Image (cartoon, helix red, strand yellow):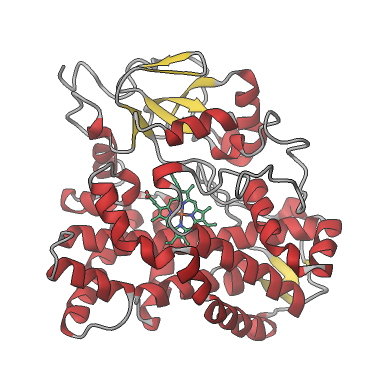
Length: 425
Ligand code: HEM
Protein backbone atom coordinates (compact mmCIF):
# COMPACT_ATOMS: atom_id res chain seq x y z
CA UNK A 1 0.00 0.00 0.00
CA UNK A 2 1.38 3.43 -0.86
CA UNK A 3 1.52 6.25 1.60
CA UNK A 4 -0.93 8.20 -0.53
CA UNK A 5 -3.50 5.45 -0.01
CA UNK A 6 -2.72 5.30 3.67
CA UNK A 7 -2.15 8.80 5.01
CA UNK A 8 -1.72 8.89 8.75
CA UNK A 9 -5.00 9.23 10.54
CA UNK A 10 -7.08 8.60 7.42
CA UNK A 11 -9.48 6.25 9.15
CA UNK A 12 -10.16 8.59 12.00
CA UNK A 13 -11.90 10.76 9.45
CA UNK A 14 -13.24 14.29 9.58
CA UNK A 15 -16.12 15.13 11.80
CA UNK A 16 -17.59 18.55 12.38
CA UNK A 17 -17.30 19.84 15.88
CA UNK A 18 -14.52 17.48 16.96
CA UNK A 19 -12.05 18.97 19.42
CA UNK A 20 -8.77 20.34 18.13
CA UNK A 21 -5.88 20.37 20.62
CA UNK A 22 -5.36 24.03 19.76
CA UNK A 23 -8.94 25.03 20.67
CA UNK A 24 -8.58 28.01 23.02
CA UNK A 25 -11.04 26.42 25.48
CA UNK A 26 -8.92 23.25 25.76
CA UNK A 27 -5.72 25.25 26.09
CA UNK A 28 -7.05 27.53 28.83
CA UNK A 29 -9.03 24.87 30.73
CA UNK A 30 -7.51 21.47 29.96
CA UNK A 31 -8.91 19.94 33.17
CA UNK A 32 -12.51 20.83 32.34
CA UNK A 33 -12.14 20.39 28.58
CA UNK A 34 -10.39 17.02 28.50
CA UNK A 35 -12.45 15.92 31.50
CA UNK A 36 -15.62 16.43 29.47
CA UNK A 37 -14.11 14.52 26.51
CA UNK A 38 -13.15 11.66 28.88
CA UNK A 39 -16.65 11.45 30.32
CA UNK A 40 -18.20 11.58 26.84
CA UNK A 41 -16.41 8.41 25.69
CA UNK A 42 -13.27 6.33 26.15
CA UNK A 43 -11.78 7.02 22.71
CA UNK A 44 -12.82 10.20 20.89
CA UNK A 45 -12.11 11.67 17.48
CA UNK A 46 -10.10 14.87 17.54
CA UNK A 47 -7.46 16.89 15.73
CA UNK A 48 -3.80 17.40 16.50
CA UNK A 49 -2.93 21.08 16.36
CA UNK A 50 -1.44 20.72 12.86
CA UNK A 51 -4.81 19.36 11.70
CA UNK A 52 -3.96 15.64 11.70
CA UNK A 53 -6.98 13.53 12.72
CA UNK A 54 -6.26 11.68 15.96
CA UNK A 55 -7.94 9.42 18.49
CA UNK A 56 -7.93 11.07 21.90
CA UNK A 57 -7.42 8.54 24.69
CA UNK A 58 -8.34 10.02 28.04
CA UNK A 59 -9.08 7.34 30.66
CA UNK A 60 -6.30 6.16 32.98
CA UNK A 61 -6.42 2.46 32.09
CA UNK A 62 -6.60 3.12 28.35
CA UNK A 63 -3.69 5.58 28.41
CA UNK A 64 -1.69 2.95 30.32
CA UNK A 65 -2.62 0.34 27.69
CA UNK A 66 -1.50 2.53 24.78
CA UNK A 67 1.79 3.48 26.43
CA UNK A 68 2.56 -0.19 27.19
CA UNK A 69 1.51 -1.67 23.85
CA UNK A 70 4.31 -2.00 21.30
CA UNK A 71 1.75 -2.01 18.48
CA UNK A 72 1.61 1.75 19.03
CA UNK A 73 4.84 3.15 17.62
CA UNK A 74 6.47 6.55 18.22
CA UNK A 75 7.97 6.85 14.73
CA UNK A 76 5.33 7.31 12.02
CA UNK A 77 7.60 5.49 9.60
CA UNK A 78 7.27 2.33 11.73
CA UNK A 79 3.74 1.94 10.31
CA UNK A 80 3.96 -0.66 7.51
CA UNK A 81 3.42 1.05 4.16
CA UNK A 82 3.93 4.55 5.56
CA UNK A 83 6.52 6.32 3.45
CA UNK A 84 6.24 9.94 4.46
CA UNK A 85 6.45 11.61 7.82
CA UNK A 86 3.77 14.28 7.83
CA UNK A 87 5.12 15.75 11.06
CA UNK A 88 8.47 16.32 9.35
CA UNK A 89 6.70 18.14 6.53
CA UNK A 90 4.85 20.20 9.15
CA UNK A 91 8.13 21.07 10.89
CA UNK A 92 9.68 22.14 7.61
CA UNK A 93 6.69 24.05 6.24
CA UNK A 94 4.72 25.49 9.14
CA UNK A 95 7.73 26.15 11.37
CA UNK A 96 9.98 27.25 8.52
CA UNK A 97 12.77 24.86 9.48
CA UNK A 98 15.34 24.28 6.71
CA UNK A 99 15.30 20.62 5.73
CA UNK A 100 18.80 19.83 6.98
CA UNK A 101 17.72 20.76 10.53
CA UNK A 102 14.61 18.58 10.64
CA UNK A 103 16.51 15.45 11.81
CA UNK A 104 17.77 17.34 14.89
CA UNK A 105 14.22 18.19 15.83
CA UNK A 106 12.60 14.86 15.06
CA UNK A 107 15.44 12.42 15.71
CA UNK A 108 15.05 12.45 19.49
CA UNK A 109 14.29 9.48 21.74
CA UNK A 110 10.58 10.24 21.79
CA UNK A 111 10.35 9.72 18.05
CA UNK A 112 12.35 6.48 17.93
CA UNK A 113 11.32 2.86 18.13
CA UNK A 114 13.53 -0.21 18.75
CA UNK A 115 16.26 -0.96 17.87
CA UNK A 116 17.37 2.69 17.59
CA UNK A 117 15.42 3.74 20.68
CA UNK A 118 16.97 0.97 22.77
CA UNK A 119 20.51 1.77 21.56
CA UNK A 120 20.22 5.51 22.14
CA UNK A 121 18.43 5.33 25.49
CA UNK A 122 21.02 2.85 26.80
CA UNK A 123 23.76 5.39 26.09
CA UNK A 124 22.36 7.86 28.58
CA UNK A 125 20.12 5.91 30.95
CA UNK A 126 22.89 5.16 33.45
CA UNK A 127 23.34 8.86 34.18
CA UNK A 128 19.70 9.14 35.28
CA UNK A 129 19.15 6.13 37.56
CA UNK A 130 17.75 6.77 41.04
CA UNK A 131 21.18 5.99 42.50
CA UNK A 132 23.18 8.30 40.25
CA UNK A 133 20.61 11.03 40.71
CA UNK A 134 20.73 10.73 44.50
CA UNK A 135 24.48 11.36 44.34
CA UNK A 136 23.66 14.75 42.82
CA UNK A 137 21.36 15.70 45.68
CA UNK A 138 23.86 17.73 47.73
CA UNK A 139 24.76 19.75 44.64
CA UNK A 140 21.08 20.37 43.80
CA UNK A 141 20.53 21.51 47.40
CA UNK A 142 23.46 23.90 47.17
CA UNK A 143 22.22 25.42 43.91
CA UNK A 144 18.76 25.87 45.46
CA UNK A 145 20.16 27.47 48.63
CA UNK A 146 22.24 29.87 46.60
CA UNK A 147 19.22 30.95 44.54
CA UNK A 148 17.13 31.33 47.70
CA UNK A 149 19.86 33.45 49.32
CA UNK A 150 19.61 35.85 46.42
CA UNK A 151 15.81 36.01 46.14
CA UNK A 152 15.46 39.19 48.28
CA UNK A 153 17.90 40.98 45.91
CA UNK A 154 15.36 40.55 43.11
CA UNK A 155 12.40 41.92 45.06
CA UNK A 156 10.65 45.01 43.76
CA UNK A 157 8.25 46.52 46.27
CA UNK A 158 8.65 43.28 48.20
CA UNK A 159 7.54 41.14 45.24
CA UNK A 160 9.69 38.49 43.50
CA UNK A 161 8.88 36.45 40.42
CA UNK A 162 9.57 32.87 41.49
CA UNK A 163 9.54 31.52 37.93
CA UNK A 164 12.26 33.91 36.83
CA UNK A 165 14.47 33.69 39.90
CA UNK A 166 13.99 30.18 41.25
CA UNK A 167 11.87 27.72 39.23
CA UNK A 168 13.84 28.31 36.02
CA UNK A 169 17.43 28.76 37.13
CA UNK A 170 17.43 25.67 39.40
CA UNK A 171 16.77 22.96 36.79
CA UNK A 172 18.66 24.66 33.98
CA UNK A 173 21.74 24.86 36.18
CA UNK A 174 21.40 21.22 37.25
CA UNK A 175 20.95 19.75 33.76
CA UNK A 176 23.61 21.99 32.20
CA UNK A 177 26.16 20.95 34.83
CA UNK A 178 25.29 17.30 34.29
CA UNK A 179 25.50 17.46 30.50
CA UNK A 180 28.44 19.88 30.39
CA UNK A 181 27.02 23.15 29.03
CA UNK A 182 29.33 26.00 30.12
CA UNK A 183 27.86 28.56 32.49
CA UNK A 184 28.14 31.49 30.10
CA UNK A 185 26.00 29.68 27.49
CA UNK A 186 23.09 28.82 29.80
CA UNK A 187 21.07 32.03 29.39
CA UNK A 188 20.99 31.38 25.66
CA UNK A 189 19.55 27.90 26.23
CA UNK A 190 16.78 29.43 28.19
CA UNK A 191 15.93 31.79 25.35
CA UNK A 192 16.10 28.95 22.84
CA UNK A 193 13.82 26.84 25.01
CA UNK A 194 11.24 29.62 25.16
CA UNK A 195 11.44 30.11 21.38
CA UNK A 196 10.82 26.40 20.79
CA UNK A 197 7.90 26.19 23.21
CA UNK A 198 6.26 29.21 21.54
CA UNK A 199 6.06 27.32 18.20
CA UNK A 200 6.38 30.66 16.37
CA UNK A 201 8.09 29.89 13.04
CA UNK A 202 10.93 32.36 12.79
CA UNK A 203 12.21 32.23 16.37
CA UNK A 204 11.69 28.44 16.31
CA UNK A 205 13.86 27.88 13.23
CA UNK A 206 16.49 30.36 14.47
CA UNK A 207 16.67 28.58 17.83
CA UNK A 208 17.17 25.12 16.31
CA UNK A 209 19.85 26.48 14.00
CA UNK A 210 21.67 28.20 16.87
CA UNK A 211 21.45 25.17 19.16
CA UNK A 212 22.82 22.81 16.54
CA UNK A 213 25.73 25.15 15.83
CA UNK A 214 26.44 25.60 19.53
CA UNK A 215 26.39 21.86 20.34
CA UNK A 216 28.59 21.03 17.36
CA UNK A 217 31.13 23.53 18.71
CA UNK A 218 30.97 21.96 22.18
CA UNK A 219 31.51 18.50 20.68
CA UNK A 220 34.71 19.72 19.04
CA UNK A 221 35.87 21.17 22.37
CA UNK A 222 35.23 17.91 24.26
CA UNK A 223 36.86 15.87 21.55
CA UNK A 224 40.01 17.93 22.00
CA UNK A 225 39.83 18.02 25.82
CA UNK A 226 37.43 15.50 27.41
CA UNK A 227 36.08 16.10 30.93
CA UNK A 228 33.94 13.93 33.19
CA UNK A 229 30.62 15.28 31.90
CA UNK A 230 27.90 13.45 29.99
CA UNK A 231 28.81 15.22 26.76
CA UNK A 232 32.38 13.84 26.92
CA UNK A 233 30.92 10.36 27.45
CA UNK A 234 28.74 10.74 24.38
CA UNK A 235 31.67 11.99 22.29
CA UNK A 236 33.63 8.90 23.39
CA UNK A 237 30.70 6.64 22.46
CA UNK A 238 30.68 8.33 19.05
CA UNK A 239 34.39 8.26 18.32
CA UNK A 240 35.66 5.12 20.02
CA UNK A 241 32.74 2.73 19.83
CA UNK A 242 30.74 4.15 16.92
CA UNK A 243 27.55 3.75 18.92
CA UNK A 244 25.85 6.88 17.58
CA UNK A 245 26.14 9.30 14.68
CA UNK A 246 27.12 12.97 14.85
CA UNK A 247 23.51 14.02 14.29
CA UNK A 248 22.31 11.64 17.01
CA UNK A 249 24.90 13.04 19.41
CA UNK A 250 23.83 16.63 18.87
CA UNK A 251 20.15 15.64 19.03
CA UNK A 252 20.68 13.82 22.32
CA UNK A 253 22.35 16.83 23.92
CA UNK A 254 19.64 19.23 22.82
CA UNK A 255 16.92 16.81 23.93
CA UNK A 256 18.41 16.37 27.39
CA UNK A 257 18.97 20.06 28.01
CA UNK A 258 15.58 21.16 26.69
CA UNK A 259 13.54 18.29 28.19
CA UNK A 260 15.51 18.64 31.39
CA UNK A 261 14.76 22.25 32.30
CA UNK A 262 11.52 23.64 30.79
CA UNK A 263 9.42 20.85 32.26
CA UNK A 264 10.96 20.79 35.73
CA UNK A 265 10.82 24.58 35.97
CA UNK A 266 7.07 24.40 35.54
CA UNK A 267 6.60 21.53 37.95
CA UNK A 268 8.20 23.85 40.50
CA UNK A 269 6.11 26.86 39.41
CA UNK A 270 2.80 24.97 39.28
CA UNK A 271 3.61 23.15 42.51
CA UNK A 272 4.34 26.31 44.47
CA UNK A 273 1.20 27.91 43.05
CA UNK A 274 -0.87 24.92 44.19
CA UNK A 275 0.68 24.89 47.67
CA UNK A 276 -0.02 28.61 48.11
CA UNK A 277 -3.62 28.01 47.07
CA UNK A 278 -4.06 25.13 49.56
CA UNK A 279 -2.94 26.41 52.97
CA UNK A 280 -3.91 23.18 54.78
CA UNK A 281 -1.76 21.04 52.49
CA UNK A 282 1.07 23.51 52.66
CA UNK A 283 0.91 23.55 56.46
CA UNK A 284 1.03 19.75 56.54
CA UNK A 285 4.13 19.77 54.35
CA UNK A 286 5.83 22.47 56.40
CA UNK A 287 5.12 20.52 59.58
CA UNK A 288 6.46 17.26 58.13
CA UNK A 289 9.13 17.50 55.40
CA UNK A 290 9.02 13.68 55.32
CA UNK A 291 5.91 14.21 53.23
CA UNK A 292 7.97 15.71 50.37
CA UNK A 293 8.27 12.61 48.14
CA UNK A 294 4.50 11.99 48.37
CA UNK A 295 3.86 15.69 47.83
CA UNK A 296 5.83 15.66 44.58
CA UNK A 297 3.87 12.64 43.31
CA UNK A 298 0.57 14.37 44.06
CA UNK A 299 1.67 17.72 42.61
CA UNK A 300 2.79 15.88 39.46
CA UNK A 301 -0.62 14.23 39.26
CA UNK A 302 -2.61 17.37 39.91
CA UNK A 303 -0.52 20.05 38.22
CA UNK A 304 2.25 18.35 36.24
CA UNK A 305 3.53 20.54 33.40
CA UNK A 306 3.13 17.98 30.56
CA UNK A 307 -0.49 17.26 29.58
CA UNK A 308 -0.01 15.33 26.35
CA UNK A 309 2.49 12.65 25.34
CA UNK A 310 3.97 12.57 21.89
CA UNK A 311 1.72 11.04 19.30
CA UNK A 312 1.56 7.26 18.87
CA UNK A 313 0.94 5.48 15.54
CA UNK A 314 -0.95 2.18 15.23
CA UNK A 315 1.26 -0.29 13.34
CA UNK A 316 -1.68 -2.70 12.94
CA UNK A 317 -5.40 -2.73 13.63
CA UNK A 318 -6.00 -2.65 17.39
CA UNK A 319 -9.21 -2.71 19.37
CA UNK A 320 -8.98 -0.09 22.06
CA UNK A 321 -11.76 0.28 24.63
CA UNK A 322 -14.35 -0.84 22.09
CA UNK A 323 -13.03 1.33 19.22
CA UNK A 324 -11.27 -0.17 16.22
CA UNK A 325 -8.07 1.81 15.79
CA UNK A 326 -6.85 1.03 12.28
CA UNK A 327 -3.29 0.64 11.08
CA UNK A 328 -1.86 4.11 10.41
CA UNK A 329 -4.25 5.82 12.78
CA UNK A 330 -2.77 8.40 15.10
CA UNK A 331 -3.41 8.19 18.83
CA UNK A 332 -3.02 11.01 21.36
CA UNK A 333 -2.83 9.87 24.99
CA UNK A 334 -4.06 12.70 27.23
CA UNK A 335 -2.16 12.57 30.53
CA UNK A 336 -4.07 15.40 32.18
CA UNK A 337 -7.36 13.55 31.70
CA UNK A 338 -5.95 10.20 32.87
CA UNK A 339 -4.51 11.83 35.99
CA UNK A 340 -7.92 13.07 37.04
CA UNK A 341 -9.97 10.06 35.94
CA UNK A 342 -12.63 9.38 38.60
CA UNK A 343 -12.45 5.67 37.66
CA UNK A 344 -8.93 5.70 39.11
CA UNK A 345 -9.01 8.38 41.86
CA UNK A 346 -11.51 9.29 44.51
CA UNK A 347 -12.13 13.06 44.59
CA UNK A 348 -9.64 13.46 41.69
CA UNK A 349 -9.84 17.26 41.68
CA UNK A 350 -8.72 17.51 45.29
CA UNK A 351 -5.07 18.16 46.08
CA UNK A 352 -4.21 15.62 48.77
CA UNK A 353 -0.50 15.29 49.45
CA UNK A 354 -1.07 12.12 51.51
CA UNK A 355 -3.20 10.47 48.85
CA UNK A 356 -2.97 6.66 48.80
CA UNK A 357 -1.15 5.66 45.64
CA UNK A 358 -2.58 2.15 45.77
CA UNK A 359 0.76 0.36 45.41
CA UNK A 360 1.23 1.80 41.90
CA UNK A 361 4.63 3.45 42.32
CA UNK A 362 4.18 7.13 41.74
CA UNK A 363 0.43 6.78 41.18
CA UNK A 364 0.08 9.07 38.14
CA UNK A 365 1.04 9.20 34.48
CA UNK A 366 2.60 12.66 34.44
CA UNK A 367 5.98 11.18 33.44
CA UNK A 368 4.38 8.82 30.92
CA UNK A 369 4.81 5.06 31.13
CA UNK A 370 6.46 2.12 29.39
CA UNK A 371 9.45 2.22 27.03
CA UNK A 372 9.41 6.02 26.77
CA UNK A 373 8.81 6.69 30.47
CA UNK A 374 10.54 9.97 31.28
CA UNK A 375 14.28 9.43 31.39
CA UNK A 376 14.68 12.31 33.83
CA UNK A 377 11.82 11.43 36.21
CA UNK A 378 14.07 10.65 39.19
CA UNK A 379 16.02 13.86 38.63
CA UNK A 380 12.86 15.96 38.22
CA UNK A 381 11.30 14.46 41.36
CA UNK A 382 14.45 15.17 43.34
CA UNK A 383 14.60 18.76 42.08
CA UNK A 384 10.94 19.14 43.05
CA UNK A 385 11.59 17.79 46.55
CA UNK A 386 14.57 20.08 47.04
CA UNK A 387 12.76 23.10 45.59
CA UNK A 388 9.55 22.79 47.63
CA UNK A 389 11.38 21.72 50.79
CA UNK A 390 14.04 24.41 50.79
CA UNK A 391 11.73 27.22 49.65
CA UNK A 392 9.20 26.61 52.45
CA UNK A 393 11.93 26.16 55.05
CA UNK A 394 13.75 29.36 54.09
CA UNK A 395 10.62 31.43 53.54
CA UNK A 396 7.96 29.90 55.80
CA UNK A 397 5.67 32.93 55.37
CA UNK A 398 5.78 32.91 51.58
CA UNK A 399 2.54 34.31 50.16
CA UNK A 400 1.03 35.04 46.74
CA UNK A 401 1.44 38.64 45.56
CA UNK A 402 -1.46 38.48 43.09
CA UNK A 403 -4.82 36.68 43.27
CA UNK A 404 -4.94 33.31 41.43
CA UNK A 405 -7.15 34.64 38.61
CA UNK A 406 -4.43 37.17 37.72
CA UNK A 407 -1.84 34.44 36.99
CA UNK A 408 -1.25 33.90 33.27
CA UNK A 409 -0.18 30.72 31.48
CA UNK A 410 1.73 30.19 28.29
CA UNK A 411 -1.07 29.46 25.76
CA UNK A 412 0.46 26.35 24.19
CA UNK A 413 -1.48 23.09 23.73
CA UNK A 414 -0.31 20.24 25.93
CA UNK A 415 1.74 22.15 28.45
CA UNK A 416 0.81 23.86 31.68
CA UNK A 417 3.19 26.70 32.37
CA UNK A 418 2.89 29.93 34.31
CA UNK A 419 4.36 33.01 32.65
CA UNK A 420 5.27 34.34 36.09
CA UNK A 421 4.58 33.66 39.77
CA UNK A 422 4.83 36.85 41.84
CA UNK A 423 5.21 36.16 45.58
CA UNK A 424 6.07 37.96 48.80
CA UNK A 425 8.85 36.30 50.77
C1 HEM B 1 10.01 11.62 28.32
C2 HEM B 1 7.50 14.45 31.33
C3 HEM B 1 11.65 16.07 33.27
C4 HEM B 1 14.09 13.88 29.74
C5 HEM B 1 8.98 12.18 29.03
C6 HEM B 1 7.57 11.82 28.90
C7 HEM B 1 6.88 12.64 29.72
C8 HEM B 1 7.83 13.49 30.40
C9 HEM B 1 5.37 12.67 29.91
C10 HEM B 1 7.01 10.72 28.01
C11 HEM B 1 6.35 11.27 26.77
C12 HEM B 1 5.81 10.21 25.85
O1 HEM B 1 5.73 9.02 26.20
O2 HEM B 1 5.42 10.57 24.72
C13 HEM B 1 8.41 15.13 32.11
C14 HEM B 1 8.05 16.02 33.20
C15 HEM B 1 9.22 16.47 33.74
C16 HEM B 1 10.31 15.88 32.99
C17 HEM B 1 6.63 16.33 33.62
C18 HEM B 1 9.45 17.40 34.90
C19 HEM B 1 8.61 17.58 35.86
C20 HEM B 1 12.68 15.57 32.53
C21 HEM B 1 14.07 15.77 32.81
C22 HEM B 1 14.77 15.18 31.81
C23 HEM B 1 13.80 14.57 30.90
C24 HEM B 1 14.67 16.50 34.02
C25 HEM B 1 16.27 15.19 31.71
C26 HEM B 1 16.98 14.24 31.30
C27 HEM B 1 13.18 13.10 29.04
C28 HEM B 1 13.55 12.30 27.89
C29 HEM B 1 12.37 11.64 27.48
C30 HEM B 1 11.31 12.07 28.39
C31 HEM B 1 14.93 12.19 27.26
C32 HEM B 1 12.22 10.66 26.32
C33 HEM B 1 12.40 9.25 26.83
C34 HEM B 1 12.22 8.21 25.74
O3 HEM B 1 11.61 8.49 24.70
O4 HEM B 1 12.72 7.10 25.94
N1 HEM B 1 9.11 13.19 29.98
N2 HEM B 1 9.78 15.09 32.01
N3 HEM B 1 12.55 14.83 31.39
N4 HEM B 1 11.84 12.95 29.31
FE1 HEM B 1 10.83 13.93 30.72
